[in-house]
Image 1 (tube, rainbow, N blue to C red):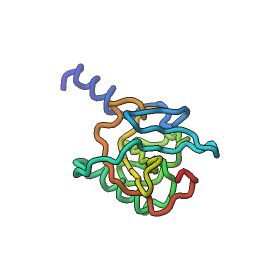
Image 2: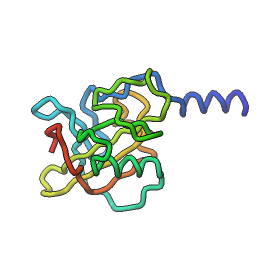
Image 3: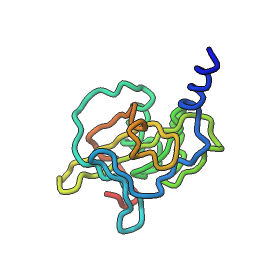
Image 4: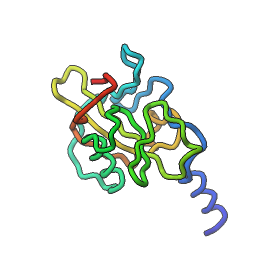
Length: 155
């Protein structure tokens, strides 16, 4: 690899030294992450997604586990090791200095004013507050399902 190629890879693919926490309200298209009346950051999807197959096996596995609470947290927004699916923590997770694995963030939420309508999504995360960055949503996998158990009061 050329030095330029190596620097490109290091800059765009290596884990960031930044945090991955949500610290303020953020929007992406019609979706929103904001604090509810209990000061908990929650995901509010704007619309149901068209069903399509997920093309990233790693994210699909983590999404399935997130929705089915197989990873144990029951948090509507949670960070996971993309390598082994280990639960890393909630919206305030800041453990970049403790992992070299890629990090996935999964979000589940109810659509306002649409009864029994939910979206759960997973994608990779590399820094604080990257929800409103379009580059952070490629790749991304989703299903129109809620989690089986939610403990943070978001829905």
